[in-house]
Amino acid sequence: MQVGQADIVLKLEGVSAGYEGIDVIHDIDVELQRGSIATLLGANGSGKSTLLKVISGIVKPSRGKIRFEGEDITSYPPDRIVAKRIIQCPENRQIFPYLTVLENLRIGAYSRKDSRQVKEDLEKVLALFPRLRERLSQNGGTLSGGEQQMLAIGRALMANPKVLLLDEPSLGLAPIIVREIFEIIRDINKGGTSILLVEQNANLALQISEYAYVMENGRIALSGESRELRQNDKVKELYLGVTS
Image 1: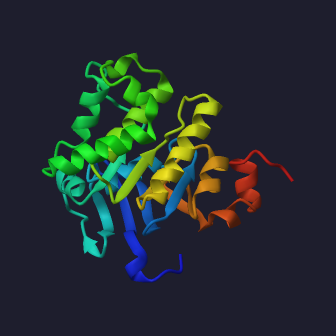
Image 2: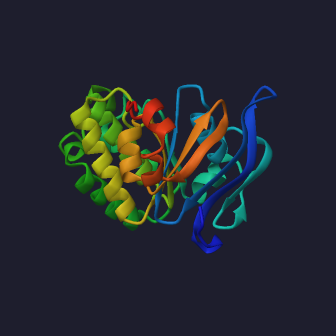
């Protein structure tokens, strides 16, 4: 990605990581430009979710560096990463099913001290997700799958992220709901939040992102501007279902 260093909000340099001493991602170089959406494509087991866990501080890299706004955050624990406003919205939503929608949203702001701004951000989230406003007193577990995904994203937004890490937001959702979620992701980005999107719906992911990476077997196999990768024969065949 040919951008100035000041424009790069998040940068991974030669990052390898894994579990119990065995690396599952290898020599990863990824950049996220400030105010942009970058997408990370790949089959199940290619290492996409592990990469997000590394950025979040949940999994420690065995090699390489992670820089946020130029600062080396490689060794930071998860709570310090959150304090930097790098926020992950996890795969499978992971809301609290026995807490109300409002309680779930408030948990997203647990580390913040700016109570007045938290109230304003709650209003912004409810404006973005009107269905959540209608269900504030319902337990999270009673919501539909699409509503739970909205709640998970809304909870992440309550942390006021500079960088939002989205892990498979379309997973298990009906196509009409998927398109609604992606429109909301686009709106979040227009508000100034930089987004790293892990997604199997390659078609939609490439439509809303500026830059894309394709992971295979724990490595970056392809990278480039999203519009270019949409024309790549391998991407079209493996991820877009287009055969030549």
